[in-house]
Image (cartoon, rainbow, N blue to C red; front, side, top):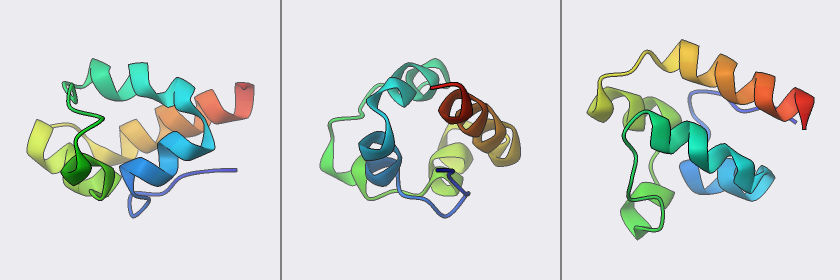
Length: 66
């Protein structure tokens, strides 16, 4: 189970809700907001000024461990 830059935030959270702290760590404090659920990881990174490849790696590392 892995995410890509095209994975929606809602889909990623369904895979493992433990991803939430990682997303909140980049400034995504509105995870319950319907618009954030339909946003891709790449879109969220663009809005929050984060490198999408680094975030995808961090999430996939977490998923591999959990």
